[in-house]
Image (cartoon, rainbow, N blue to C red; front, side, top):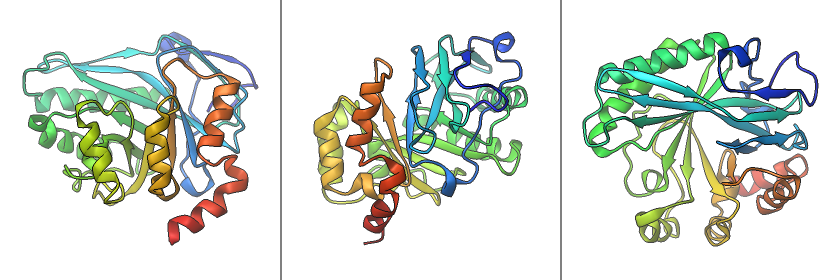
Length: 276
């Protein structure tokens, strides 16, 4: 993640003063990037035990709160430790300040500017956007993604998270100007029954012209078993793993086993399954 830093250096991601000189080591060439990606969310994570050949890290960089015409970034407050060779990139969570109101184009425009400003301070060739777009905000969100793509350097890859239903029966992301959609197959809530039933009939596919990946939670074993049975993990471009309470070496070993890792030894085997 952090070019020029030595192994085990403590990365305190609480604000610009703590982030000076820090840049993400990103998966610009997806063919050379590990297929497994660990999400490091709002908790302290010491991930020095992650083998750079086995997994990359997508770290929570902060939440962008959208006001009526504003966007405010609250940066990560937790530390993150990584092996210096670990591929990593920032994830931006987007939330509306006024959930019952339509999000304005002006607020989304400011959000795009905020992300661009962040990357000017902390360069990365890949970013991820995490936003649970309501139906009334979908058109504005697609416009935001198109605008963000045009404002970032051409080599910057944009990944977005997507509800499982968006990749099965409620598809609306076809026009999205992104490089990857990640179907969030955990914490399915009220859509759980319909989503899992649809999964049995059709493969995950957002419809966008990009890589299709899948996100899982280590603690949701039943859903993960279904994903494995229906070859959703094998077909996915990348597998993202989430752990609500953070990561330990034992939890990391669990996710390696659950996803058919170590990836270094299993990648060719998984690719064969994808091609069948």
